[in-house]
Length: 139
Image 1 (cartoon, helix red, strand yellow):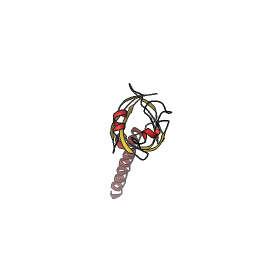
Image 2 (cartoon, helix red, strand yellow):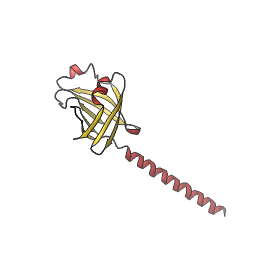
Image 3 (cartoon, rainbow, N blue to C red):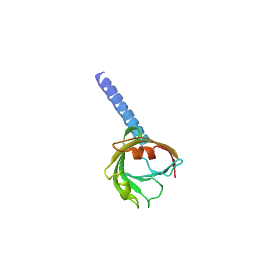
Image 4 (spheres, rainbow, N blue to C red):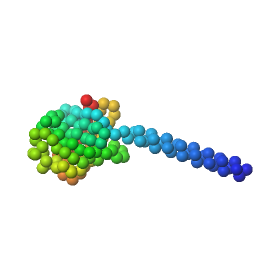
């Protein structure tokens, strides 16, 4: 009788473990990293996610100014980013507002070809908050 009880307990624990693994895997799939090119509805702001790089083009003209960042996806759609490079004709004017090394975060919620960028936070990030927050369409 003891052997059956032990085997029953072992099978129950194993089943619960598999259920936990399946739940974690489903949660990880829901946390897919942002990807693709997105345009702010009614604006010129363009953001592009590729692997761990975020490119921000405030006027949809890379030759004017392009802000390059490294980013990582955290829980609940929180994106943490750090400016790594500035490019374009106006990069010298922008570097005072958006210096290399500036860190910020925001929430990114995508649903099909629509997304919302919200809750921009960080030290001295009003320029991002005022220009980036809003609804986006996938290009």
